Amino acid sequence: MPLVIRKRCLALLAILLATLACQEEHSLLPEGVPVDVPPGFPPLPVPEDNPLTPERIELGRHLFYDPEALSPNGTIACASCHRQERAFSDALMLSIGIHGRKHWRSTLPLANVAYAPHLLWDGSFASIEQDVLATLAAPTALGWPDTATFADRLRQLPHYREAFRRAFNAEPSAALAAKAIASFVRTILSASSPYDRFQRGDTTALTPQQRHGLQLFFRVGCAECHRPPLFTDYQFHCNGLLAHYWEPGRSAVTGRPADFARFRTPSLRNVGLTAPYLHDGSLGTLREVLQRYNSGGYPIAAKDPRIRPLRLSNEDLAALEAFLHSLTDSSLLHNPRYSRP
Ligand code: HEC
Ligand code: HEC
Image 1 (cartoon, helix red, strand yellow):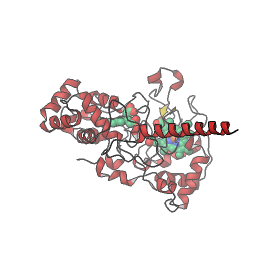
Image 2 (cartoon, helix red, strand yellow):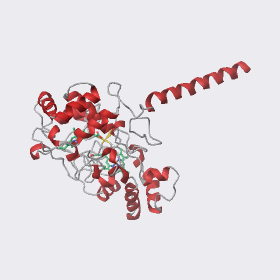
Image 3 (cartoon, protein in one colour):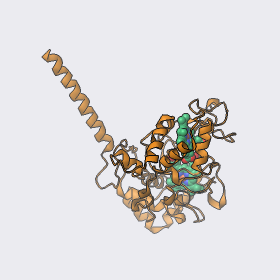
Image 4 (tube, helix red, strand yellow):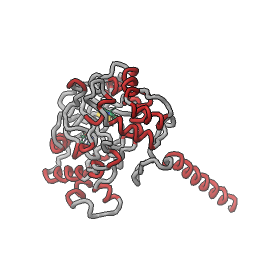
């Protein structure tokens, strides 16, 4: 008997140590790195080949806001479409890039992007670094003809030579710029909404109507895809809110017909600031989105079976909408760490 107990204790101790070791490996950021992972959030994933350092984050922030460095004609930067006061999204249906060229999708907000295992509405990129390189070259975004021309521009701007030396001990290049910008984007975290204060024990943080909306959010199944604390499952679904899908969504990436019209579940954090909605920005208000969910969406083949008529009253819809507004983190909009330098 004592032997068994000892064995169990040892096993427990081993599990405990393993857990501690795992936590340390992921969540301990190097000293001086200005990132506070919110309580209740998973450890911040950081790629091994691009560790966060204050110098990289700061350089990334400068580039993010700098049209002279980021676009061939000096007119547009990341911040033109990802605006801090809109939770790093914009107010447009479809985003507009260099020379007024229209993208076919709505701009995604940038809070908590570090946690996304795949990026964009269709999940086509695996890392923020990859996304930045593609955005630099995209004719509908920054429009550089090639990475060498972009690197030349950076080398012509004396303050960047110095900043790249401090951050990477190297000359400016597109790959290093992507690393710096990705580092900055990775630090943009958002978890100080009234909902978060409620979760941390402040029962006055939500109004009675918002608390009712929170209950409904779980009861009618929204939380299955928009899963707290990040309010997304990062999976691909068709919610059938549109009568027609003009683009293939996830199936463009996988080639599987079953993925037609599936999109990565968007996070609902700060959703009160990111209208218009859906991948094509075609729904103007949260109320419109909720009404379509309430009616069960359109009868299209790809629709997830969990989207079905909800038969909620107008009062219930108003409560759900009020709850969605409780996910707005107004500190994100003013946090000087994320602001234009
Ligand atoms: C012309 C407007 C525009 C510019 C400029 C722009 N973006 Fe975006 N961004 C978008 C759009 C639109 C999407 C969604 C595209 C899609 O899903 O196909 C997006 C998506 C993203 C995503 C994915 C977010 C997620 O949740 O998957 C990241 C990260 C991102 N942009 C970062 C940046 C950075 C960094 C820059 C500057 C180097 C930048 N963007 C410049 C419009 C823009
Ligand atoms: C089966 C998974 C699933 C369920 C269940 C679900 N959603 Fe969604 N939701 C999605 C997907 C996927 C999108 C994006 C679809 C698109 O762009 O075409 C989305 C989009 C949204 C948007 C627009 C967000 C934006 O940034 O554009 C809101 C708001 C929303 N859902 C709220 C809800 C609410 C409220 C419920 C419960 C009534 C719910 N969702 C249930 C998967 C789901």
